Image (cartoon, rainbow, N blue to C red; front, side, top):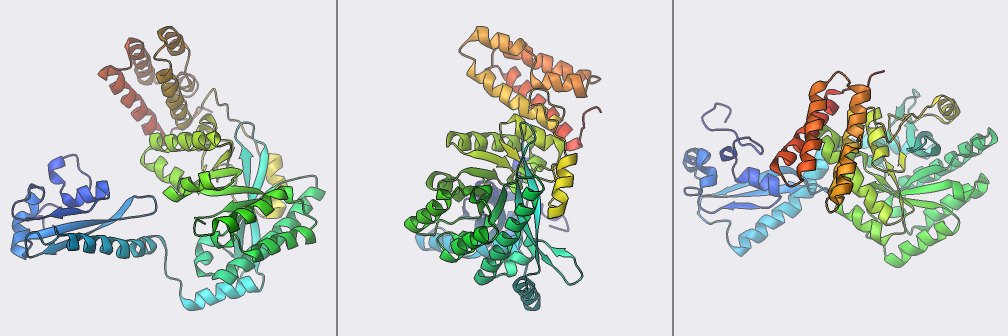
Length: 470
């Protein structure tokens, strides 16, 4: 392949004929089998070289992560046609997938921490060298400070801070309990200082999945509340990952004891996997947080898809009566789009980075929130507004008169163009043509094409980092 004798194996190509069974395995997440390498048209480009190497049959085994996204494909070859077709062979392939897949996911996501370093992190923790930083969470409709999330950092000898992604994998069960004990005591103490300065700020803390039903965490929480004379109603616990292995009765009793005292329970990382959606239905959450990885990855790949994720997950949560916080709001466009799509709260570097306790008051005095959900100023906000407009238009198709009035009313994209791109006549013409085609009927291919073009142009502006006129 490197020498150019045969074409490279690709998982994406504009020329479908260049894609083979590996690409099919990658795209579908399904195991693909080539019974006869000499005859299967999918391997035509590689057949001669494969036969020379002795390939007579092949199997492509996709490995997927927790989001059901393919991250690798194992290709197996045999010198006997039909070698992977029998029931025993299929069981073998399934076993390979189940055994190797999780290991590859761990390898792709994590890193090996040397034992001496693991020991040092554990010793720093046990000695109490922990500082809690606080990241604000604001109401997206008016910019009110709703709460802060407490985020632990280990303090090194030189005063530098170690982030959780670095030290958490090195901690065992007892160390995680110790981290929670130190964190809740420090957070409650800081909350008391803010209150004396006139700032009554709720605090959210992460709770590891193994804490569900563990009496030690219950006791650590209430010990800190009593020692600091803290108000339980000003505490929120964010449940990390999946706690589905916990006995239902034990889990429900644990949650019940917390909620009786007014402690709110929030599901963290909604959308990070199928299990997180199931937990929404089975656990009594007061709120959910949409996974920042989901938002940031999708925005880079497809702004439209990222916004649709936020919109549909927000609607799902609201239908269940819980509030929605979007994490990962790193810029003005994401903040504006999340607000337009109806999310209740936002968190991310575009609002504030995690800060020391004594910096919160200064940040709050200087913070300004200027989102207007009816008049977007960023291309991502305009795209969010268009997706809402498009959905409303579809809902009005049974009432032509109402639909015509709706189309003739200035939409959010028009407002964005008027404010941010008054000297872009091509966008104005595209939007005008799109509205005219909508009046002619939503079923036409011309309307569908103009819709794709408009979304594509707005998405291109997002990727280019287009900013509003200032």
